[in-house]
Length: 225
Length: 300
Image (cartoon, rainbow over all chains, first blue to last red; front, side, top):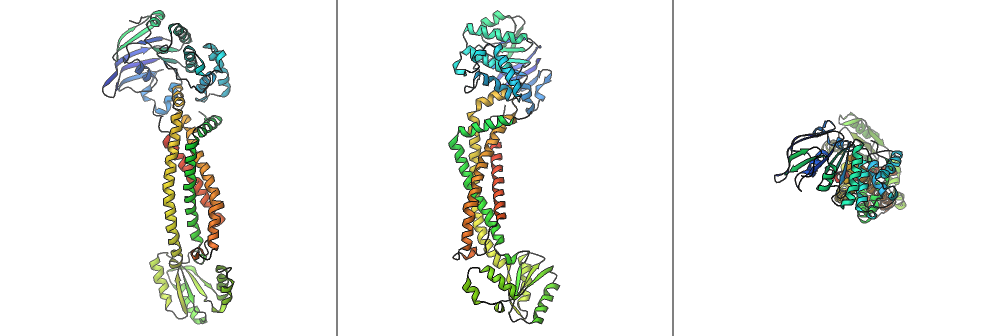
């Protein structure tokens, strides 16, 4: 589903974010990306989403070399990839329902699809009762659920999560992980960058550890370190 | 992917009301610049109507003495028609009665002046359309008839019309220059307004890009916003040209104190053309200004 071949990403000032990284993630896998801050986890995710391009190497997503995608096709790539962030990136002037519906509307989904899909996904994340609330009226965990609902409402093949529990307390984080696990069980490939040791150790999924841009460990059913 | 109309309408409406002062500033600048621009276009067209004796390619007029003999007249006509520099059928004879009618038309309202003349004292004339409009050639051609017996005077279009044209061109050029500067200001204001609007919505744009909205889907509401601003401005400009500027020009042309405006006229057709120009330029500026603006924030 995702394949990196000798990928290097170097930022201005010779900051090496990723160095000769090669890795393959199969469809339906759940993968943790671990490592210290600045080890290249976020860059990894941004490269897959084509928010950035590598200096060297090739990246395949769903069998396609995404370097060859013309810029107008990038949005169509992203429709197959859901993204979740530490800071949720919710629109504060829109309700829960509107935030999720927005993701479908802006890719041109017809109204009847929006009307059926949004309540269904909000049911899945357990926020049916909060559809009319604004993000500021929700707890952090609930906001992250909205964000996950938005990322998943279009049923993407891949879900990228960049420290989704970084702002949440441990109990809330467990709930979020259950949700991501459930999404993974529908066949969606999940790539999650995290610092959360206990989550990684409890879930026992594949772990890829990065250190200053290099993959130093790739372990199935791994632990944090 | 079809861009939904209701989405575009909703987004555009939100954008327009979000930053009222800046939107208003852009619209007002558009109004002033386009009114100036449209007036310049109208003046330019009015100049072309200014002296209808020189319509249809007529470049000079050979005025005959009122007491010219038939032989003299026919000799001049033969010479004119035989001249290779004169267009085939480019010689029109205007007799004294027609000249009198024309005189009455030009000096309409000035009864005393008209009463002092009668057809017999007015010179008949040949209106001549030459092959070329080159003033040098026309001048040389006309001069050869000056000394012929029976000729009273030769009057050239470039001496009469061009004097008027030059004056109005000077006015027009200054109008256009001022309009150009203001249009540039309008363009920059539109650009800035759209950028501010996009900056205000950068989080939404970020999310749109993340979930896979196409660039055009993101851009279109902003471009529509830019065009609507200039379009509103152009509507106000059209109204002011139609109901303020044109009546003012009409008034001037009836004003005897400004002889330059004599016979100067802006027709409904001229006004329509000027108005169409104004709307066209407005749409262009709105489209280009906002199109340039939306290239920002969309580089990912």
